[in-house]
Structure formats: C-alpha cells, structure tokens
Amino acid sequence: MKGKPTLLQLREKYGVGTVPLARAARVAPDIVYFMLVGIPVERVEAEKVLQGFKALAGVEYELEEITVVLKSSEPL
Image (cartoon, rainbow, N blue to C red; front, side, top):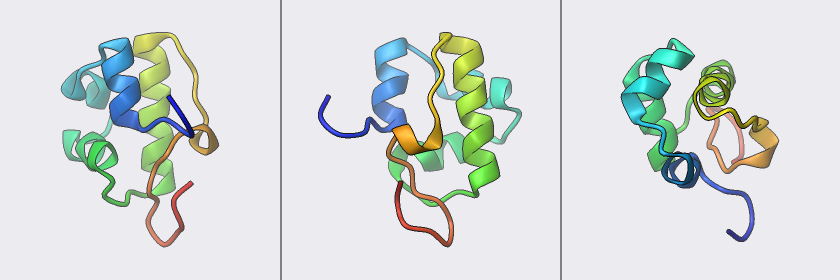
C-alpha cells in the first residue's frame, strides 16, 4: 500500500464489515459508507469510526494516518 490507506483498504485488509463497524462506532451505517467512498464526514464521526475499527480489528489508526475527507476541510 503506497501512501495513506483508505478506510476501504483497511476494512478489506482486516475483514471488518460496514454494519458491525457502524455498531461498534455507534454511528449510522451511512457515516461508515461515506468514509468508504470519500464523502466528507464530521471529524468527530470519523474519530468514532476509527475507535470502532480499533475495537473490532485490534489495530489503531489516527485520522492523520489514513485518507479521509472531512467536512469543511482538506483531505488528510
């Protein structure tokens, strides 16, 4: 993987499903989907998704370590 991975790449690498990730993150599945396809989300929502990812996959990522589009912001 060159550059920062996307949530989609991480989800596929660790076998984490969209709905289980949304449940673990306590966000709507739409938020996870938006992150997967590059639709802007609020920073707080993205951070919740990464915490849910950590709970399911046992691997921790910070927002600055992945490619994610935040509302009112440039991609990280």
